[in-house]
Image (cartoon, rainbow, N blue to C red; front, side, top):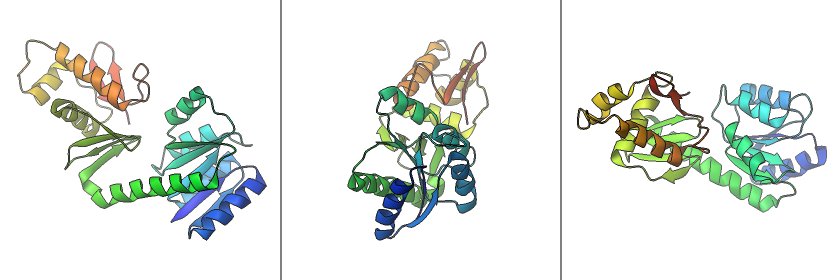
Length: 225
């Protein structure tokens, strides 16, 4: 497995590279955010370790740019520990978060966990539908947010599957009722609003400011890709 490590602290990068190579990983290194984006695109690593504060381009911006072309797992390395900083990182597509100084054993454990999750998703192949941090196991009818199982009802799963299969397309409440409920609740379009609210609570990092399950005011709902 190939891991990209990008940090402007040379000694830290050397230490991480040494430990990961001893675990059998192929390690590529960079020292700034611009290199992180370029190496992620050209080398296609299986996982990225990315520092927040770097020259040329900060880690959050680099992460967002990587997310434009890759769903590779990304662990953010930072000296900050505030919860808001973590939320900002997750909003940019980060999968996990390590605060400096960190225990190298914990870092290696988190790397193994993310790689196992990615390998498992790859093995199920066409049976999984993934956009951003949300994954649907279509055979088991399970939904995951950043790898964590979300407890959806049958109709909630039907709604999110339909929207994710048709990303960026806006559907009115009536259209969703006709498609998902087949006229069961034709007289009450509010049932769509309730299901959308519950899906945001279960699948969005911040339900009040969703990244995926979006509202087109006066029109309906869509899944943003």
